[in-house]
Length: 163
Image 1 (cartoon, rainbow, N blue to C red):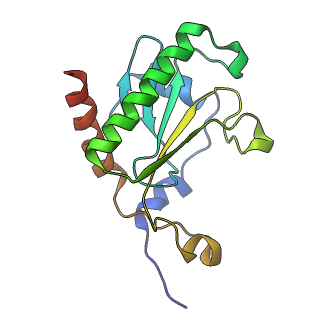
Image 2: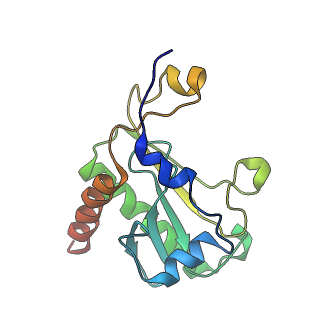
């Protein structure tokens, strides 16, 4: 059997369960770098997914605690989609993906891990970014540490702000 070392995962394995809404807590703490928050707008924010499908996997959420797509106000929906668009622009400029998966998982049966605060996933994709590891070893190999990805994308979001 081969061994793949991933020591950075231990902080997630040993983390204490946290009650309350993940998005509301991260938004209100004001510790954007620690919480991997890349961008805030008037009604929404962008952050890195701590359990990404690929490097650069973003989530865009409204700052208001909303659990259903139909509960979003028009301004919130527009603001969120503007940040999704900005995320695609920044990922395209910094990571040069060949495509994107963008979507919402509405309800636990649809794959939502957080069902009470709606959010949009923006997942950059590259040809060959999936391999046998998830299928055979139930392991995803990430080529870059989260902190490095955060720094790269934060620079992109800051540069995009000036446009």
